[in-house]
Length: 214
Ligand code: FES
Image 1: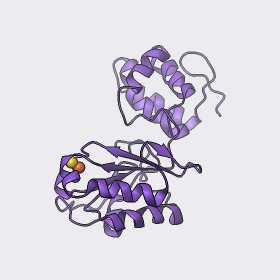
Image 2: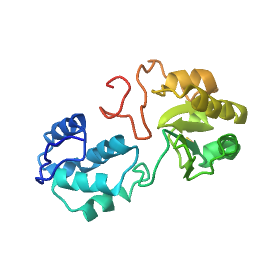
Image 3: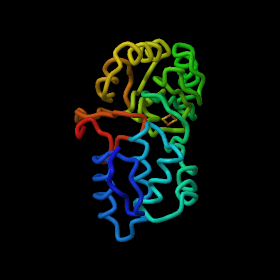
Image 4: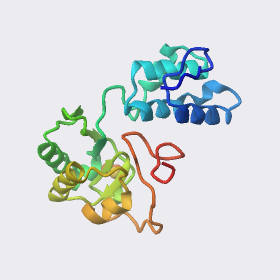
């Protein structure tokens, strides 16, 4: 815990590295309240999910009320306001995936992990959710682990994925690696291999939480 104070003049609950990242993000915007969404991801990276304290800290940094921060956080499903496992498995059950066995994939993940969708296991290791279209219809059925994509799964490959997460406990989940291990038909050739990956159950796009930067 850093002793530094945040812009509201109270002692920050965040690590020094996270505070520095917050300062860099806020400096990009003409008005600091515009930084509320990326700072919510920072708050998630501190705890793995959005705690009340994390949202209050964001409010202190961007100069709005905790209620205003919560109104943003509660609107988007990718802001997790309950404890989320180290690995968040999102199974698409929208139309393209549903027609190609998306529900079977979800049931295989639930059965193998012992975690019903919307819940997290007792060890805080795996969370399971069903997701609306994740933009990979051409590679249906598709799944994400910590928002990193795998296309063309089968129920058996989905079970292997769960067993792999539990046994290998990868620090970074890399989409190309997971596609090679568990995927099938892709929507298109991704062409460039991704060297980074996600380090936590929060989006890994931009500079937040990518394996390359960590
Ligand atoms: S319907 Fe599953 S990725 Fe679009």
